Length: 161
Ligand code: SF4
Ligand code: SF4
Image (cartoon, rainbow, N blue to C red; front, side):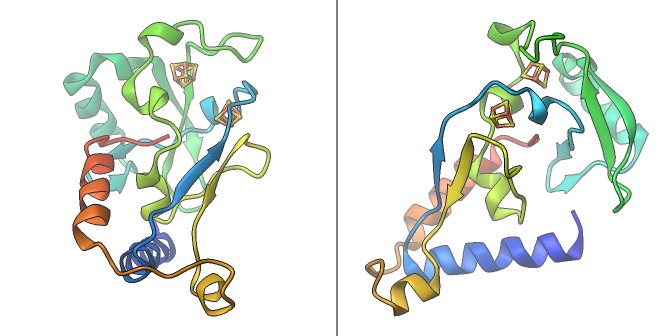
């Protein structure tokens, strides 16, 4: 995770708590298979950079051996491809896919400064300070417990596509 994404994620969490408004995930999957290519994998609170970390991750969760290192992104994070993606862009092991796939996209991705592709059928919808200031959205009292509980739930998914 780059410093930029760390800060972006921190700002998003701060805003959600202050406004008492959790991000929403809207839309639906278009089955394009693009999120199954050039995948970033996460361990605890960081994206993988070391091959040894990936080996350890696979030992803890053998379902992850389907992922193969295909390179690095410009920030130096490992990029993976999935051996289970069919030529038709459909998952060949849909019923037994790892949790990180079935949970995608997660709010955790958003709260860690991540983003979705522009052509993904899903999108993050968050209330901004400008929305409240311009009265496009209502402000309601911060609910620390709710936001925090949601964040903790999302963090249970240790790895994110
Ligand atoms: S990129 Fe988005 S629309 Fe395409 S398969 Fe992944 S979740 Fe579905
Ligand atoms: S297991 Fe299936 S859903 Fe998960 S990355 Fe591979 S092809 Fe995609």
